[in-house]
Image (tube, rainbow, N blue to C red; front, side, top):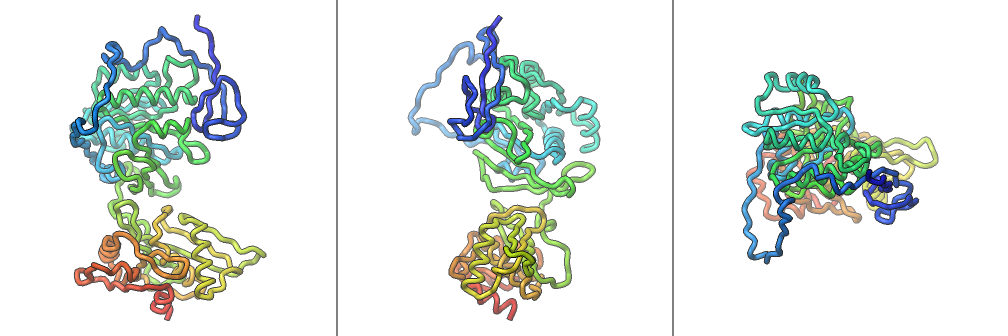
Length: 459
């Protein structure tokens, strides 16, 4: 009988130590080591074994100019939002990790993907639901069952790979990685060592067979994906499924992507029949209002390659306490404080004794500096209680001296505002070089400083 071996793993980064440590020497986190029973038996064969294991083939170094490059053909899914976030489709042999809060719709999104892949045999492996539960959900999502979708309820890695060899899928979905275990380790499912070992075997399977694998991962109370941080380094793509369970809209965001942009996002609407793609995100980010209200401004922003118009809401009032409150939802609070300092120092607005609350409508979190102009317009509109025309949009970055700096891809922002029926858009004067205004029906107003916008908007 093999001797039991006890090892300590860091829950933050996966660092392994033979004894307990108060501080991790790898990530410098405190009190993150947990005890696990690990048995590395030499007699046990790996769960995934190919002919390469038997022959012990070794790779040889090759000159970079001798390496032949072939264009990878991606698998296009019927889900346009997922294609956009992945960078154009699923890359063969890629390992994709998707995380999100409980009940947000991760399993629904993955089951829709498995059911709707045309001409591709898919294997959906669940360690959390029974076959009957999955069948009920599949009928609710798509109606008749798909003949190319196979369901397996299993948590053992050896049994999973046995069924994979029997079915021969072109797409593999794991729900979830925290429920799987490998017989090579005696640790419990969901532990750091089991998550790392199971993911490593799935990664090896994906790379050797060119079968794309989707992994669903749980998250902690802090919002990070559960398990060691090395899990996110091992996979090719990390997707975050965000949203409020009390609202119908969901956001799929790429946190890491080796085959595309990591700044793309997809928007879905949760319905009784599953997740619906929202091809025009401005329809949920702009409120349906006809009257002119103070404290509201429309910003033309970019998220990845997608132009969107969002509604910036501000509320400014006299502070009832000694220290004024500064709060923002969906926008960086430190940048808001910087813009408030610019308004007070350069333009004389007394905001140091007033509470300022800022909100990006629709639950979106934005980082595009082009919404700076809309933020300060909304703040001043609320302070002066003067409404901004609902047909006006803004796109410009504000500097510390009060200048309006140029932003990238301004033509896409103008075209999106024109498509949604806006009549005027304010942009930086430094963006007008090479810009052809004759092809736009919307009125483009170039401005160089913030006071020019104030004069045009508030008189």
